[in-house]
Length: 351
Ligand code: FES
Ligand SMILES: [Fe+2]
Image (tube, rainbow, N blue to C red; front, side):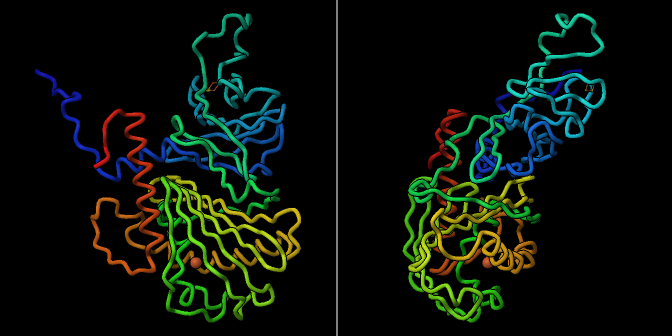
């Protein structure tokens, strides 16, 4: 009987959603908080775009991200034991280097020179920044986010308990920087705010989108802080931030870094930072205030339909001028997606 031929000839044009998912596999996302990983301590389980990972800090203090599945017989390494420069499997004790994943010990073999030479655990690149441990499933299309407004001075970060939200990365980023919802969703935390949104001045360069707004102190939780300039800065796929410049205190930051567990489900890592010479409220206080805001958003966002941006216009949406940041963020994401396709898959997807 002739086998059905499933060959390269069957390849179809990739949809925008395909390109977006592909770009996310080539992007950095956080998978743990740095402070949660103790050198030589317990590993953590993480999931990035459906890929099961183990995250840990080896005894030498180096953070490591690897496949959670032991390549011997499939045990879960997140319940394994961390050694000086390796992770040990809880089933038969095989150990894999925290650097390149090479198997360095098989307890059942008397002569360790006879370890199967190809035995290796799949490892992923690691960076630590902003109090988080970051990784990427495939070669990253861009270096890990490094915002110039955060490079100009020294910041101290405090990362919140991550939030679980059953929607995608883009929906999460769009909510974070959307301003037209304040008078409806944030009545309690922000007090009355104007419904009319002034013409927004949004600029985009590649995967970066910026917008500056003036913050009038208002009557909510922030009333005593005085006026500030807010610099919104999002980077596709998954960084959304506001850097506040207070006339009386200096510079502080709130930022969200949603990690896609799947295309339609994120774990939201987020945190606050104060410049070292910031003279306003403490990090703990700012974290608490921002958390109240976030928790007001969650019941709205977790019920949005569809659960991720309809990248191929499969759902009808209408937009108003206040959505211009959102529309630019979507362009930034598609720009990243097309560049990923061109760089790693060789096709000219720009059209
Ligand atoms: S399953 Fe991991 S050592 Fe056997
Ligand atoms: Fe909000």
